[in-house]
Length: 112
Length: 114
Image (cartoon, rainbow over all chains, first blue to last red; front, side, top):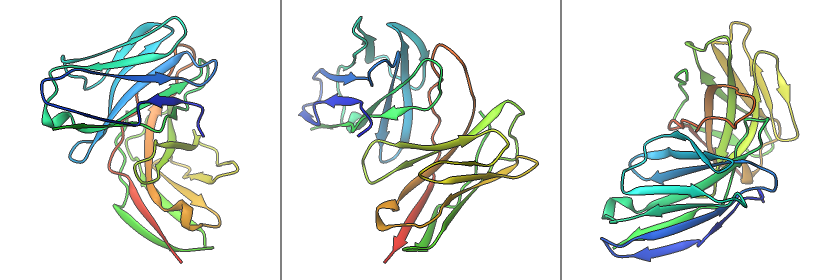
């Protein structure tokens, strides 16, 4: 158990819809990262938040957005969903002074 | 971040040492070698990292060559639960403000045989 929690575990929705994925980092970790893992693209970094502020962006689509709240939990919002957005979405967190990232169990999104 | 090259797959007998190689010939002086693994569809798991000295923790050992162009992750007594995809990642280590997002390659699929 990494200490990072993600909800929901599974999500099935239709094309064009919007969903929100939630992540709670390890206690005390200020950084939260979001990753997408699909069969054809592998594990890809999407976005990072540090203490409530966006810090780095990876391959995140404009239809996707994220935020980190004062209690440090984070949400990833996916809108206008397409079939190709079906993937595992992982959240990770890290402490301020270390670089190791600890990953949650993921949310499996299926878009039909 | 420097590029890494890993074999796509490896087999190892249960109870034996699993040695996973990684080539990172373009590594810069301030880049660290990190290893993560992902057991089928679970979240990736941090294993170990190092700069130039060999490192050991409760999970594994990391051997980095003197020229730092390659490294080997060693699982000393592999078990069936070690079957996973192992990722070697080279990156700058930052202090304060959190680390950057990880760039995962295809990794090595290690299969532990009973």
